[in-house]
Image (tube, rainbow, N blue to C red; front, side, top):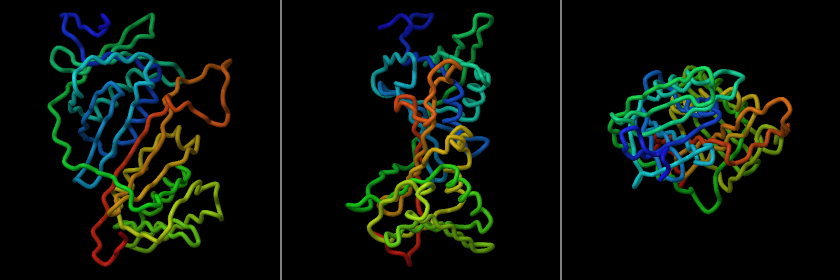
Length: 305
């Protein structure tokens, strides 16, 4: 066991890790922060860190921070420790370590003497910032998303993140429930809102492959989702994702379960003389994976499976 994985009292720590881009982690966690006061469950493992949030047993989101994102990742726990934390407090705390335009490195340790999450800046010669985030015994995750394919042919599409966010923002006007329909001929994805008024947004696959990047569907399917839950999947997409105009993937599984996936770069900002890949490519190990799971509204009149 490394000496850094032992605290001042000689007790073994479950995790000691270092990050060299705090802002990237802030962006990833902010993606799943759809309320001001929001609790999260953090799970540690030898593979990395997973943060889980949910609401009303209808919406669940996960942030996957793989161990390759960290410049150091020393894991010594048995099993997979879990703890609860205030998501807003955790994000605000990380923000104190982030200075725009600079590379900010921090060390994270768990657990502290009172089961806290301990944070410390490690790249400043002039000063060192320390922070403690109180944790709690986590609530039980109330539902298992149990995402399964809807058939032998995957039902999914990939759309530019900026276009997806704009479409869902526009659907706020009709409000109520949003119907998502996929049809194979002609290949098209339709978002339709009915409430105070009607609004329909079509993404035609062959007509505009710059927006609808990929499409897979062998039969027409249609499900309704509560607008506030659908909006949560895009409301806080980081500006870096919108600027890069990455693709967001939406998959409809068995029973209409909707999975929305985003990719957030946590790569260290390049210095001016470094080689920059202007195609926007990021090594997979420097990407945080964000997943949302949205349960459909029950509609007895619609049969899809």
